[in-house]
Length: 188
Ligand SMILES: N[C@@H](CCC(=O)N[C@@H](CS)C(=O)NCC(=O)O)C(=O)O
Ligand SMILES: [Zn+2]
Ligand SMILES: [Zn+2]
Image (tube, rainbow, N blue to C red; front, side, top):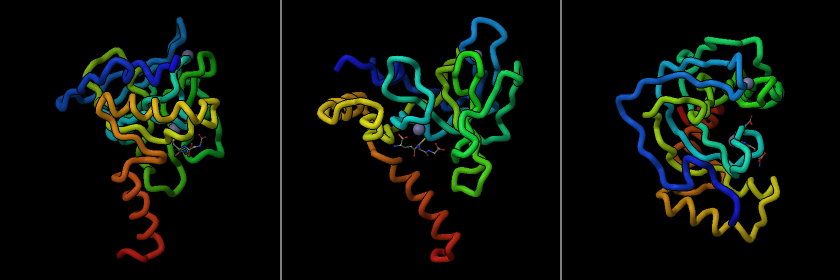
């Protein structure tokens, strides 16, 4: 398989630091970079194979984690941000010039409302939580990967110690279903 899963996965995973408490993200413009300050480490960091999450060119997967939205502030060049798809659940704020997604925010009623989605590779700091699993793996087929490559893709994740799922991990799926059950009062 010629393609890279993601630079933070391909050569093995570097563990983060439990005492790390945040840092800055920058877009990839040569000047006037959008800067985001995060006052928190990420949680539920994972590889996402869906077509909507930003990924570096040449990679099959995005690496995306969440932080409380109160921990996110735009600290430079906010005027360069624009929402990629206003109809999507996750409103991904991208740099209009370089295309990098700086943060994704949920405004509608949703189990993950209150959490923003961010890509820690946009930071120079070390200590961010390492990827915990791979989600939306089968979605890479929708972007042109051949179904025959899937065994190899899943084996590569397993080789670096990550479980693969075709939606999200059991913990996150249980959170989503708990939210749904509480809303319909099946669970009190
Ligand atoms: N197979 C679809 C899956 C898209 C999808 O459902 N993505 C997930 C993971 S990021 C999601 O929660 N999307 C909500 C959104 O994009 O607003 C694709 O690849 O486009
Ligand atoms: Zn930019
Ligand atoms: Zn995604």
